[in-house]
Length: 203
Image 1 (cartoon, rainbow, N blue to C red):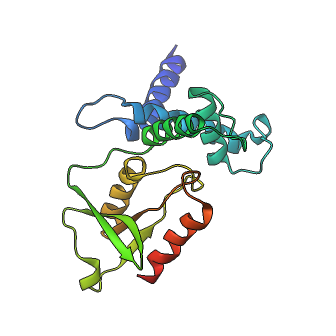
Image 2: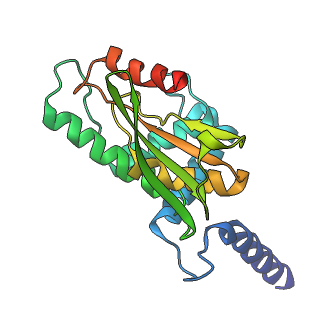
Image 3: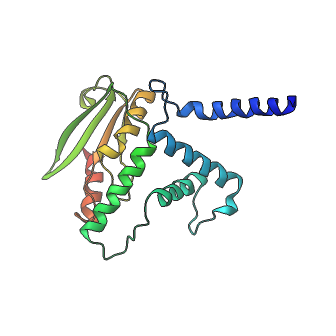
């Protein structure tokens, strides 16, 4: 009887410690982000301990496999073939944004975001300056900055999707983040997208 109670107490303590990082301190509830993060950690841990259960056709690490499985669980598979329609692309971007914003932590109220348009020759490049509490002019100071090229294979991704992780990155490192809002495929060619990326280095 005593051993059963001891096991019960230990199990509850482990559960409490495991769930503590996912509990919102203000609301004391599990948010949508927290639920997604819990599933991701569970899948990732399983993939590390029992990798043969989800081998996958492509070589991926445990975290990437967990993300792939999580997307498959919540959203339907999208066929990204060569004959994509505009609707296919928009659908892919919509679901990608939903899954990523659910996984990323919420940005704090002290995070500041400013939109800027940088001119290079005849090209305009959209940028966002992101910093905790105060945005410093990176052109007029010697401060360190992070030039952030978001993920998405040049097909999806924008400031709304990645600002949460960028805000937290800026706060933890106490640095200014420069988010590059480069042109996306298929509305623009890969050459035009790469041109935006290269031109930012030249400015």
